[in-house]
Length: 354
Image 1: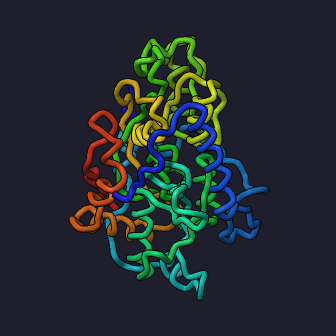
Image 2: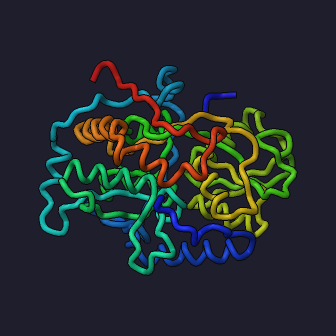
């Protein structure tokens, strides 16, 4: 096999059709609460909707032909620096209300990036990824709230960066060699791996032969979808397993599972654990069958911003008061265990020549 605190109790107890209804309602509410990303045509930062191009799948070449990158893509980042540069200067030059860091995030991943439904119509985004965004904004602009959040689906993360609609994406985004040919990444800030999510009553026990004749849901543009497609071609996935057409957002898989339209979901274990917390009728099945790392994604030519984010991550890991560990304990410790993630930030490695 290839290498691959403030949470409120109101969300506990979601399940079955009731959970589906709540989730669908949240998705609709979220769509109304955040601006829809639109393609600006002139390359300026906007928010996407009609006119946004679909993510193009690039061939598995470029950086993937380098064995070192293919095996350890999480190590292919620039060394930390607190210096400003052209990308950061441009961000700081924004005037008035526009002087904000523009960040692509998720708004419906429970405890990662979501609007708490108990917070009312003006509820702020919350979660582990959102804490990191506020820390980056504090360092670059001197104000943790100097952020313009833009909700983007899984399959629009890379196009949003490449088109300049966002400065960065902080959205449970796995670093891999194919993506390194499209965008730049920070050092990793979280370690996870692909896992199977299925109803507790299901006979599925993990990524194994019990997936035979089972319909599996993944998100479009996700590493889970790529992993399953590749495994199917390599005959590493039981031949009768059915990879369902991918959905735009990961949460859509949970809804489809609740509706009985699929039998299992494959996604990052960290996300799967949060979905299991939303719906107590489902659970993680088996251990992770890949090893993956989340990173902050930025434009390929934004070297100064990549270095600055890496320096921020160095300080964030060391901060014992309001840093990485405090955020983990606040949002994730209740749902993650030794089978899905470790409660410590992954150690960074940097390119020797940069």
